[in-house]
Image (cartoon, rainbow, N blue to C red):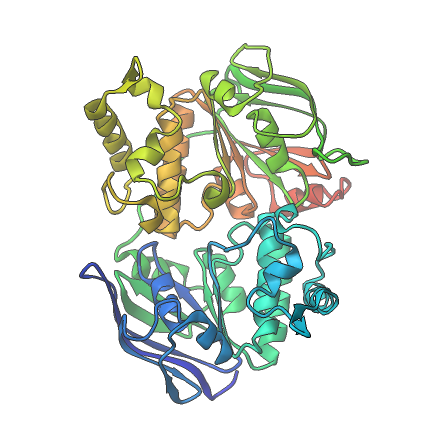
Length: 509
């Protein structure tokens, strides 16, 4: 580990409307060191890192930022990047219609005689993609990449384009499979060996022992714990994050013999562009009353495509049958799926979930406004009461319906979306990466809610890249590989069995 201090944050305070999001926070990271920054949603982690990375310019906060022993006063993200501080945020700002190369080199597009040098742009981006062994066409639209592939591409660009001295990664593996996360950790070792300091924000405590030299814990805007005792310290980290011992959940025995609520048979899904291999290939599955079925697989396995097609939200070719609570016709649109008792919490809340610029009230009501309307007139008092009850049930913080949803943390945005679908009173709920960007305390709350839904007689299909989540929360587990279901396992299956099925190693599974 390096000894020179790459970044020092000294007594930083950041206010929003007079309320302190960060309170006199201080810590430092050395060259070649990785510091894990952890805490609940709203603890101030991302805000503090945005101060360090120039998102919030000098003059909008108190305290100081020091780079390599010199005080910095960044007026913009570009100034911070020029100084070697690069932030890859939790919510990526990817222009879906621009090429992968254009997104990676945004703000630093190579030019020749005043014109963008597209040959050089493709060369640079290809070199950076190769660093993460991403076999994708750099000239293809960014929308063709999965969320995890987009993140790997942008991390690679962040490391390379600014000659980074300090790399800040905010929830980099939130939508990753275990294999993708391990791949990132290998590359982080190369970054560390090059002397780059890394600040790693995560809610996955198991990752800390793999990547971190030190751990910094924030709570309510303050740094409350710093330690180099990284291994075997999870309970202490949780106590520091939430200020108390976490409540233990009692889990009832798995129920897998209930009435079939959702039946998918001979289901095949293709993209709008013709492909030789279907994205989902002759898949059949059932979800029963009272059970949570986990669906695991690596990127490209077809999990999300399957869910979207079942929900009537797929633009390409779909064949096969979907029965929802006895109804035999496959939903042709999300509206039809909702009317038949199906709900879906999407993988990417920013791109296909949240209605940005709207209030919490409007976002919760988006899928069920007809339930609180008569002759196109909304019964506002009933709408507010119903939505406030849902917000309380999900422990939304802050508890308000009038605030803009964009002002909430990632975990609380996820709660707003879950409240939206609970308002439809679904028979079957599909949740795609339900705890993406959600802190440890909120995770347990979401698991409790999903379990309560199942115990109340509903069915839940939980798609997740988090092996621990799949193993701990599922009553039954399905695994996909290259568009097919390659394994079905009871609760208590081993991680080795699931990974073997997810990589096509049927013998090992």
